[in-house]
Length: 347
Image (cartoon, rainbow, N blue to C red):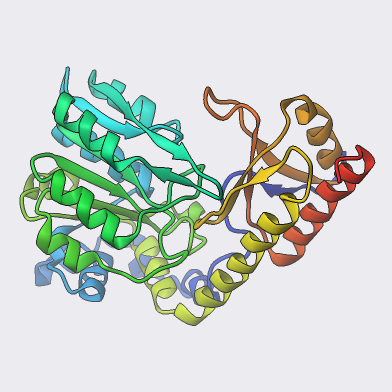
């Protein structure tokens, strides 16, 4: 096994955050480390929640902060669900969705996601049928979805939300900004029971900082009180996140490179017999492979210092999830997989 591993298995960013984020760390002084925030003095929770609100054109009280998107999801469930409450979640989704209802003794109910010719997609008709039958207290929708990489269009989101007006909907957009325009304000105006969840971990390459946020609808004031921290939030994390928001050109360039590499994996890996790469709108690509090569392919890649996720879940037990690294790393991985395929006479 290679002494220096390239990790492309955890949906982290190998590009790293914008240079301005490192400047925040270099210049952190006494006040940022030793003093609590004074943001409350002008009626806001934090300088970051205020900035996010201004960017989206919404009220600051609609922005809640947390320890990554995971924390916002957890707080939404713990704020609104109790023993016996029903939570609707998509199949082929993040394993944590299937566990989170257990934390409040709730009931997780799955609705279908379907494998299409080039990508996965939500079966909205069946989802709404299950919703009407089960009458859940909360519905999770992920766009883009992990690990399948598919997303809903704005029109699809609007149609679904219109049908779910009587329940709390959590729209998990942890992988947002990987493509498409923003529409937060419009959705908030039309859907008072909506929570949109985002994070600085993925697109902004700040997984180690652990900061996420939620945008909450007008009917969900209880969520704001539930998540509020009397003494404020991590002041260094706030400053780093703002530095990332102030660096759009840096992140747009990386997003462009990722789009190129998603297309590369789709085009190249689909040339291999038994492989099926799916279109993705996130920082990873899902690939179906023959189950019998799991062990040998994994060993082959590890010997070359390349770690990707070999999935072992009920519905995804012969699939790879490849996190997009730098363009050099992605090319290296693609070439290694092709080399393996040639050796095994699969191309």
